[in-house]
Length: 106
Image (tube, rainbow, N blue to C red):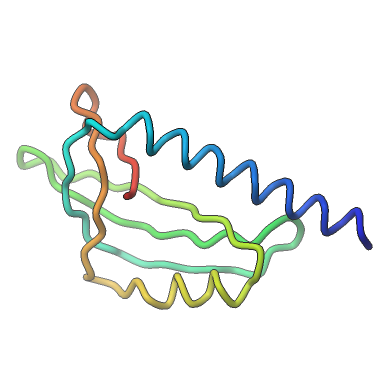
């Protein structure tokens, strides 16, 4: 049982570290507002809980869509996060100036 918890914790730490690196690398990118299409936090079969937010944004008249995944140790925390992002609400992302299809949620 202890090994299973360690696996979940290691996955959570990895996902959090990757997110931190992406945020640092994108610190000089332009900030745009996206619109939440949906958010969910399904029960994980294995590993840590991951909430997913689907969103869209417009750059120079072109519509783009993306998904943002955020890791949680506790399922209820992920569910609260997903429930707080209702369809139509704004979502702030950083936009890669060389490739507008690449974003990093703030």
